[in-house]
Amino acid sequence: MKTKLYLNAILAVAVAALIASCSGASKDKATQLAELKAQQTKLAADIRKLEDEVAKENPQATKARTKEVGVTEVKPGKFEYFIQTQGSIEAIDNIMLSAKSAGIISQVYSREGDVVKKGQTLAQIDNSLLTRNVDELKSSIDLATTVYNRQKNLWDQKIGTEVQYLQAKNNKENLEKRLATLNEQIDMFRIKSPIDGSVDEVDVKIGQNVAPGMPAFRVVSFDKLKMKANVSEAYVISVKKGDKVKLSFPDINKEFEAPVTFVGKTINQLSRTFPLEVALPTLPDLRPNMSGVLKVIFKTVPDAITVPVNVVQDVNHQKIVYIAEVDGNKQVARRKVVEVAGVYGNVAQVSGLKSGDKVITVGYQGLNDGELIKF
Image (cartoon, rainbow, N blue to C red):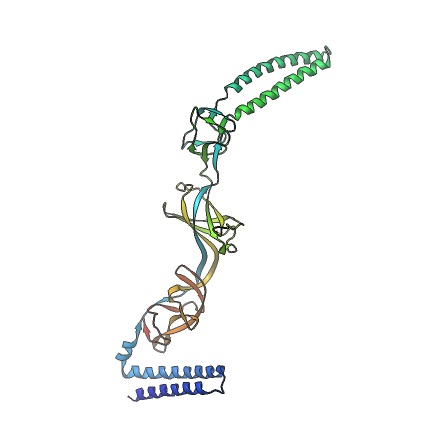
């Protein structure tokens, strides 16, 4: 009873001091604040002392006022700042082929799904007229070569004129050049694959008229794939070539890391984004146009202190958390002012705590500084 009367007297003195401080017009606010803080410290010490005495007199009442909480001991660890966005796979070598010359398709050698080599003929355009011209030209070259050889032998023996020799030589060379040109034209009547890959589309059939620019085949190389995504312009300074990216493909249950290989320099006026590309390793399950999730890691703090973001509270324009401390033979909650350096997902990187601090993560709601706790 005596202890209770003493506690009431302390509270009465505190109230009187507060009224006096508010009425003292001659004192500036800074002085008043300093005096009140000093009084608060003394009162807190007196209250703790009285609580100890009350606990000794009535242990059951004190036990009833103790709040049960859960704590997590904080330790320095790696904390990664990242940007998460959606992207899709594209083949670096994804080529739509068309005919180089107009004509009618006479043969189709490849079907969808066929594996082809660089330079392999996929389809033939009718070139019968050019082929006949080649046969005629070869006969003319044979005759010109015979005439040239005879004129050369005569000229070597100083028989005949130099003009006859030069005319024979010139005629032979001109015919050979015409044959080379004709063979190049014939080659343009073949639709060839420019890469090693797989035939993904076939858009021609025998008897079809084709012309330059018309789609004929699509050939894709699965050896070189890339992931392409668009990132908000807010991160244009943060993302750099070489940054590590965590890629996940839920459809095939695959996750791996790869570096950023390209960062666009132009902002899209409509979406306010810039392009980003990541070169992918060769994996059998990856396919062009497959979608996935990219986490671009643009900053890593190796020894960060982190806490669950929900335990950080706003009190009097300050960020605070509660930690468990030993006060004599009791466990009490202590308010700690922290600064939040960054928040990603459900985790916040903070300063103001040290390794080993026990942050109250369960039952922190409604706690008061110095309140008795157990865990």
